[in-house]
Image (cartoon, rainbow over all chains, first blue to last red; front, top):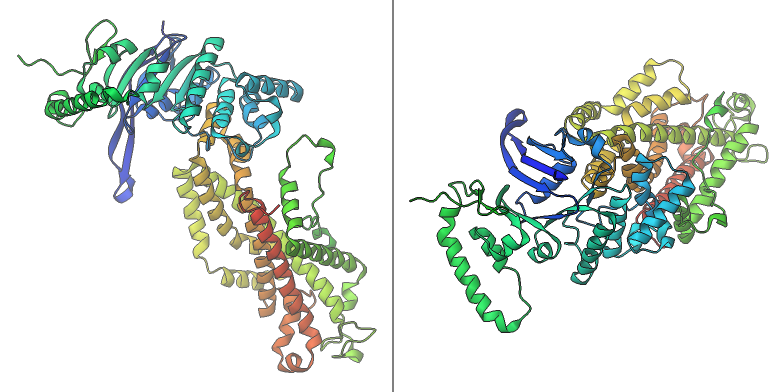
Length: 312
Length: 309
């Protein structure tokens, strides 16, 4: 049984306007997503900005109301009415936020920030609480003496570590990592990513990893889903996606990964150009009249792609 | 019964936490205090304010208001002397005593109105801004309704209608029409704050709305609250003095800074008896300046990037 199963998830936001603030139409931020994550694995959600990957993550944790579809956690349904329906799962699903600068309250000391989840769920004495926070900080590689500092006294990478300490404080099973490194320097990115993998092993964590960076996704994830305009374009294991991309959009994303080797530069440029021409020519075949992807069809046992129906 | 209002007139010198818990990083109060100490003008203003407040509330305990406001026909319009330090007015009443009691009354009203408007404004603004949507809409239409009322007219009507008003009832009347500004301000800031990720982070770790509102969002609004409240204090003292000057504040039997200044509407007093109105006018000016100086220093203290200390 997968740890997290999402079936036909839809998140639509109403666009209001006109007289009496009527609902004019809705933006289909997420429009029918289906995914399953096994315990201990990392599932990557990739897509350009506005493709609905962050909305998916936030809907799963309950920050956005779910329009329709079901989310099953350990086989139990989570109801789609915001955070209240999540009460039983709150400890088990946690989130690492994208921006380490706004995700820590600037008026709170590290102790208060990391202890917040503990104060909500565990009745600890001040002494125990402090010890737990010091342990957590040690786990994320920060000195326990930093406990009385304020967030602005830390660098971006350190702040993200504080965010991670907060997320693992309740010993969750699933962590939704919403672009956890996109606000950091490249040198710090690697550090934080490796650290995330390290605590995954140590704490048996399952990740839903949201990113727009295919290189990072390839490094981190076992399974990948590629989103475009709220729908899946392709889904499969990392090998499926990178070795055998089926959809033209996936192919184009993969060609966009930069390569370090300058000797390949000209060849890659040619390749990119070829894929670009193919993309432009085949766009109508791969996307419907509204520019949306078709429903997924199986390519192999693990690999699904939104391929058009073969016409003759 | 009037001593009852002298409760905690804004701590003039916030007690600095003793250094025994040195491992803690500086608390909010400590930062405020440090900033004021760094800014000599603000420190001088604060000391002066503290001295005025202490001496005014202290001396007014000794003074007998009944005796001061009693007309004395043998001492009309006397210039300053050893017996009457600041002379007497046209009723032979001691101006110095009136100044002390008047300042106390004006300060009490200013502080009371500021605290009450602050409390109401913060509650309504915070709830409205944090939840947004329908709740915000309902609260803001309510605020709009109060905003379009001609405040001054209604206050004057109230003051005329209520026969026996003291400091508390007068403060309540003023509060009823002065809480909207701070509510609006807090609401707009809360709307901004709730979009920040730390609010969502608090929700994902299981904090209730109430907890997030008061423990997470409110501290981030403290700067704006302290600054507006300080500056509002000056404005409220001014408003009370203005109303009394116009004759819609306290009667002459209850002196305030405004009643003393209003003696100057008499051209003779204005020209020849400076001792009646000049001290009160100067005191108003200095009080306002001092409060504003302190307010500015506090404003800087609450923003780490502007701090001097």
